[in-house]
Image (cartoon, rainbow, N blue to C red):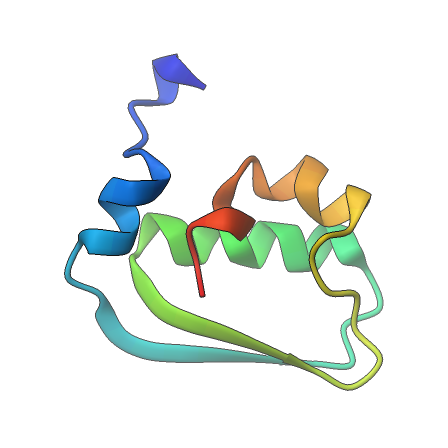
Length: 74
Protein backbone atom coordinates (compact mmCIF):
# COMPACT_ATOMS: atom_id res chain seq x y z
CA UNK A 1 0.00 0.00 0.00
CA UNK A 2 2.88 2.40 0.70
CA UNK A 3 4.14 1.99 -2.86
CA UNK A 4 0.81 3.23 -4.24
CA UNK A 5 1.46 6.69 -2.83
CA UNK A 6 -2.08 6.91 -1.47
CA UNK A 7 -3.08 9.67 0.92
CA UNK A 8 -3.97 8.61 4.45
CA UNK A 9 -7.64 8.28 5.42
CA UNK A 10 -7.45 11.58 7.31
CA UNK A 11 -5.83 13.37 4.36
CA UNK A 12 -8.56 12.12 2.02
CA UNK A 13 -11.33 13.16 4.41
CA UNK A 14 -9.85 16.67 4.67
CA UNK A 15 -9.23 17.07 0.93
CA UNK A 16 -11.53 19.12 -1.26
CA UNK A 17 -14.02 16.72 -2.88
CA UNK A 18 -15.35 16.52 -6.40
CA UNK A 19 -19.06 17.47 -6.16
CA UNK A 20 -20.26 14.07 -7.40
CA UNK A 21 -22.37 11.50 -5.57
CA UNK A 22 -22.34 7.94 -6.92
CA UNK A 23 -25.52 5.88 -6.47
CA UNK A 24 -25.18 2.09 -6.56
CA UNK A 25 -28.53 0.33 -6.83
CA UNK A 26 -28.95 -3.45 -6.75
CA UNK A 27 -25.31 -4.30 -7.47
CA UNK A 28 -25.03 -8.05 -6.88
CA UNK A 29 -21.24 -8.30 -6.77
CA UNK A 30 -19.57 -6.97 -3.64
CA UNK A 31 -16.30 -6.98 -5.60
CA UNK A 32 -17.78 -4.44 -8.04
CA UNK A 33 -18.87 -2.26 -5.14
CA UNK A 34 -15.34 -2.40 -3.76
CA UNK A 35 -13.91 -1.31 -7.10
CA UNK A 36 -16.31 1.68 -7.17
CA UNK A 37 -15.06 2.65 -3.71
CA UNK A 38 -11.48 2.48 -4.98
CA UNK A 39 -12.34 4.61 -8.02
CA UNK A 40 -14.28 7.12 -5.90
CA UNK A 41 -11.29 7.40 -3.58
CA UNK A 42 -8.96 8.10 -6.52
CA UNK A 43 -11.22 10.86 -7.89
CA UNK A 44 -12.07 12.30 -4.44
CA UNK A 45 -15.79 11.76 -5.01
CA UNK A 46 -18.00 13.34 -2.34
CA UNK A 47 -20.00 10.21 -1.42
CA UNK A 48 -21.38 6.84 -2.46
CA UNK A 49 -25.00 5.90 -1.75
CA UNK A 50 -25.70 2.17 -1.76
CA UNK A 51 -29.35 1.20 -2.12
CA UNK A 52 -31.40 -1.86 -2.95
CA UNK A 53 -30.08 -5.36 -2.32
CA UNK A 54 -26.43 -4.37 -2.69
CA UNK A 55 -23.79 -5.37 -0.14
CA UNK A 56 -22.68 -2.62 2.24
CA UNK A 57 -19.50 -2.12 4.26
CA UNK A 58 -18.25 -3.76 6.38
CA UNK A 59 -18.18 -6.74 4.03
CA UNK A 60 -15.15 -8.95 3.40
CA UNK A 61 -15.42 -8.88 -0.41
CA UNK A 62 -15.80 -5.08 -0.48
CA UNK A 63 -12.83 -4.71 1.88
CA UNK A 64 -10.70 -7.03 -0.26
CA UNK A 65 -11.34 -5.05 -3.45
CA UNK A 66 -11.57 -1.51 -2.04
CA UNK A 67 -8.07 -1.69 -0.51
CA UNK A 68 -9.05 0.65 2.34
CA UNK A 69 -11.08 3.11 0.27
CA UNK A 70 -14.29 2.08 2.05
CA UNK A 71 -12.93 3.94 5.09
CA UNK A 72 -12.13 7.17 3.27
CA UNK A 73 -15.24 7.64 1.10
CA UNK A 74 -18.51 8.65 2.78
